[in-house]
Length: 303
Image (cartoon, rainbow, N blue to C red; front, side, top):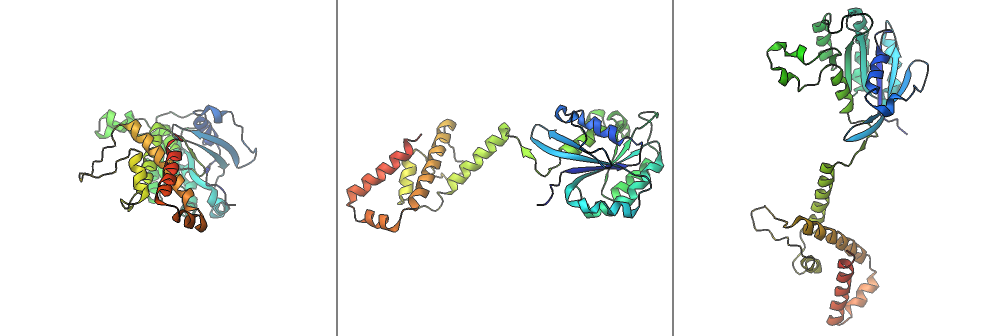
């Protein structure tokens, strides 16, 4: 059975603040902040339950520390490509040398192709928060060339407004730590469970209605199904303007429910044996009409 692609690999040198960053993410979600690591050796496996307005998902952080990473070290992770859908490389924003290890991960990212790939300039140790990130242009250029998003944890909307844009416009973009959370939350994680929001419920109802109406396409006026539809109070006539008005919404929804039951009845009827059909054909016209009326009554009265 293939592994779920729902792991986030967090890597970087010791002391760059990887665990603290993960804890900060987990602190937003009370259900996850209490969860202990699933392992005490490298890599640490830390479960995370993402619970947003729209979905829930069970994912996990794999936190690994390494210095002087080689291509051989990176290749050892490739056996887990099918499980990794998030990648976060963390380095100390005040120590440019801690950035260098990400270069060895370029082949891994090319082969794994995680939907979320972040390079995080973090604040770790006794440094001035908000101080300019050293060599930021060099870091960003490498990230752009390798399909990685560069995120400076301490970037704020105010610090992004120095390029002439209004602060309120810049504030619409998530930056810094908020951008990390946004990137992880908006990913379509394997195994995610969507929540039934009012908008989604309305869309599902509309899809079912469209499916029910599509079943009537091509049915001739002489077909008994048309008679059923007319007796159920549904009017599918097209006046040519394409703006079909369903009338009162409650009545329309009730009619759609009846139509669904009618479809179920029709499916059951289609399973009649050939002998039964032949027997019905031998009945007088009056008796066949009576049988049809009884079938319609059973559909309508199950409301």
